[in-house]
Length: 127
Image 1 (cartoon, rainbow, N blue to C red):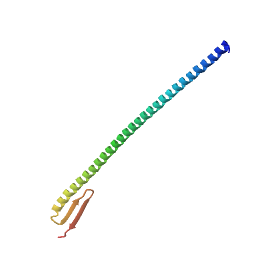
Image 2: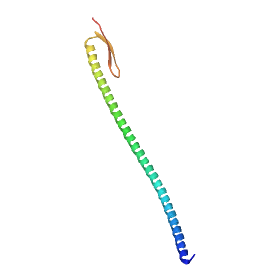
Image 3: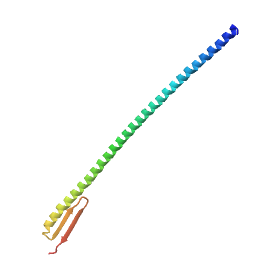
Image 4: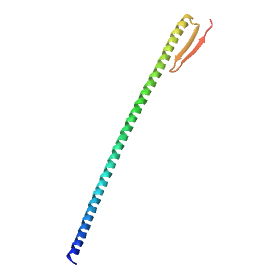
């Protein structure tokens, strides 16, 4: 082998060596980039899940607040109806007592105010 062929063979070996080193370096860089991308995707998924849970928690709190307000309004309405019925019953009772006093014992009866209605039991005595 002469010197020209030796140099050419040496150049080819060096080129192959440099090429394999470059390919190895590129492969390592690609693997590191892939690992970083996997980590980033996992971090993004975790952040998205945290945001989703927070939004769900806020929605749940808002829904419970709405339910509580509705319950308070319904309770207020029921109490108002009860108070109106009680007031009506008191008015009826006072008029009844006055009328019973005016009738001088001709009407005897008993009455009872229940939560939702007024029950009357009236006896009329003929003198």
